Image (cartoon, rainbow, N blue to C red):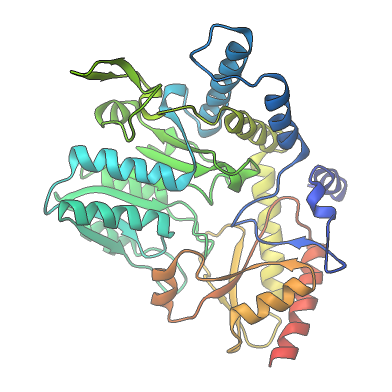
Length: 407
């Protein structure tokens, strides 16, 4: 993307013109949440002001319009993920709820005492704790794939831990700390050789790289809207139709039912079986608008540009004395975590904030990974397509100043 295209994109994001402590905002915390373009915010406003009505149940005009928009959004998500079956798309509140849904529904149906779940050492807490809870309920074992010093999963160790007791593998596509793009196609292929289904946490993948769930052959794939320029509180669970039909509902209530009596309740067809209660039909249409925005730019163009930003920032950061970048995988997305000398990450983050630069510090909801590395946490910069090399230059200059102050 050229400079004019980036400027046009930045104009779509009003928050990027904000001043922080009288400094131009530099927002490098996209791994936590992304900013929202005007078109997404306008879509929310349009929904509430012009077509707001509860969906699927009303015969009146507004209800039908809202229903059509919600179901069109489902089709857009399905197309974005590479499936032609929109009933394989379940709307959730985000990645966390989607993982919990599978941990409960699949766990109740298919897991028993003595079985095993496989995750990796680099998982976000949302892809650890639900499986720990399942293991506690069912008296199962949680197995953990280790990683090497570069931040790459040990695939030999992974293959060796797969056995007849392995009931599910759940790993992240892209590490929110290390930036590692995991070989999920190989992970899935090895698991399927043992007839074991796989869930992929795509929260950090879908904003940055092309994802096709059919090509990956993923059984389940999850992501959050707010990571990809959509609102908070809306997310997606993709599941193969056969699995979604086989597992029980996660929650009970309206919409997910076919018939209800005090003797017996029968469940609705997909996808409504897993969408109890009034869904976030405004959020779903805003998510679809965000995906259209991304597709209009082109996910391959985004991936290429963000890779350029990451490589440029890595080169400049490595010029700083005492710099230690955490995670040097060969296949890496637009995240850089680092430490400088023995300065605490929090101190660096606080001073950068005073200079108008938003970064993330701490364990990034990946405490087991941070503990395994023997570090207190990291400073993390995470890029989006609206960031620029000029911003990186300002950031590096500011970081050098901060390091000098704290050394």
